[in-house]
Image (cartoon, rainbow, N blue to C red; front, side, top):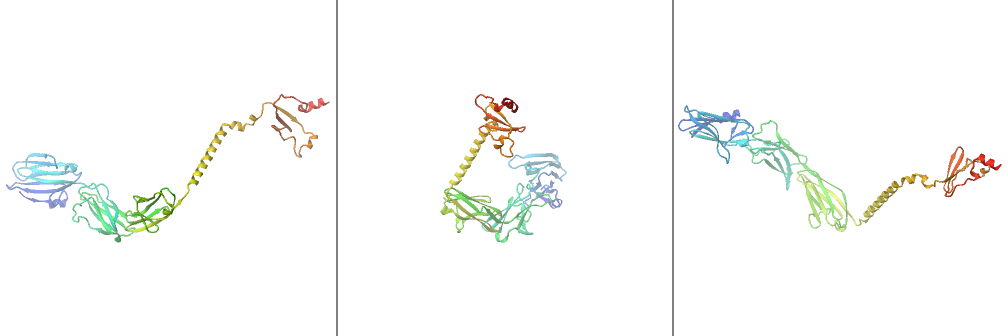
Length: 417
């Protein structure tokens, strides 16, 4: 079966693929699929969610049986159209990944086109850095697209690596890794990854950036532990990209590794060193947390001391507990007997004898100068000033009797007469 192609015009317009097929018996027919483009291997591709038209026509004046047949991978053939004539066509609206497969225009002779459905990745690319030995590894990922995207790395307006497929063909993976020597980068350097996808039609550049940083560890400078107990030191890297490696050392230059005496664990940029059953003789002293990546090495020193006695803290805790308990008990007692404590009348008997005393010249010998009456109370007596007189209330347990001394002043004088 001979044939020609008008693909070049279709590529310039960016709309359709037109294939002119000629039969050996002089029959000629045209297959048009668009909008779409043909790859070097003669496979067609269209963009997801587009409306794609398929047409097949014959230049013969005879009426022929023409049909479009679609075959998905691992499925039975499906006939879209079938006419008796010299032209047939159909349109797929909002084409999706399920529409990917082989499309055959069949009549006396048949021609088949494989159609792929392309779609761009979701969201922007994502960058991160790692390191291996003295090399910096730059990762750029742009996933959930078909086919794979292409990537370009650059830094300070200079390309760090070429396009993985300079001819514009799809990449080999959705993640690109560029390895750079540590000596070729510096602290604070910014790198950029630009993603390209054949199905991405937006004009906005899809890219991600990251800044390379030397490490900067931080830790508590002084740690106090107890002899015979486990003591944990913690160190984290405040800065560092690629994320640095954290190691522990004694101040004498000996690296600490996990063994029966030490347990080292690291999660992200945080590392912990646990000293098991601490010993003052063996474990007290200086420790170093070292943080390193290809851009630099930084250290932070930690001094560890141990207490041999912990009884003082225990005694202090018990003393505080006892004081708090005593305060609570005292508060409960005061709350229950509050009325008895603030009411003085509770402490006196109901019976009392009241004396009304009057100042006299004879009493001046017994009264201090500047006093206006008797003001002292002895043996459960209460004194109160009333109209220049002093009233004295005396508790009495026995029967009350009235003496001449208890009569009013006027009555006392009349009886004396």
